[in-house]
Amino acid sequence: MSDDIPPRHDRVTRHPTPGRTNSLWRWPDARHPLRIVVNYLVIVLVRHSPSLRAKNWLLRRIGVTVGEGVSWGLESTPDVFWPELITVDDGAIVGYDATLLCHEFLQEEYRTGSVRVGKGAMIGAGAVVLPGVEIGAGASVAANSLVTEDVPPGATAVGVPAEIRSDE
Image (cartoon, rainbow, N blue to C red; front, side, top):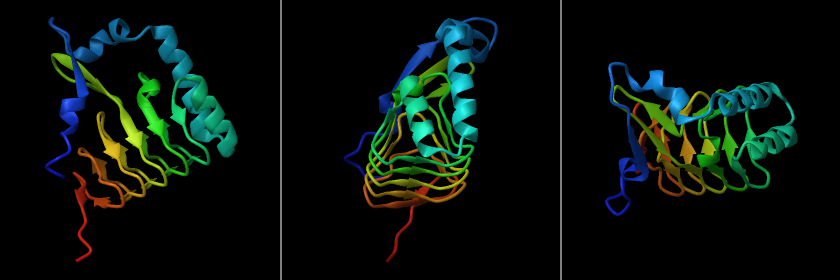
């Protein structure tokens, strides 16, 4: 994307998990199982609730920073392991079945990183935003896109992986 913005990998923290199994087997070492159960139950309620006020209230209870007038579409999913790493600014829309991930479990490590959705930004249905990504104010992410890099303010990102669409 832009040369003056550090890539998302500069904003993720690596957590090595040496051993005979991949890092997903070590998830109870990463987060307390009870915390995951509570987060999961809250997120299930959020995914199915038609009330935007209830969604925002519930998400704030598990640590998501939710601005005023934020809209979460049905089935949208914030990260269940590290919801406190998500910030969604005022007036943003997270579309139907969109996913905001703050973690990646890999073979020999897991990674965590914050996700920020800027003021008035829109994330389309079914889009996936990876850890460490920032969606700028007023930016748009097209439906079913995979966002692997930052989206500058006012830009539109489209595709898998998402690329900035030029309107020229």
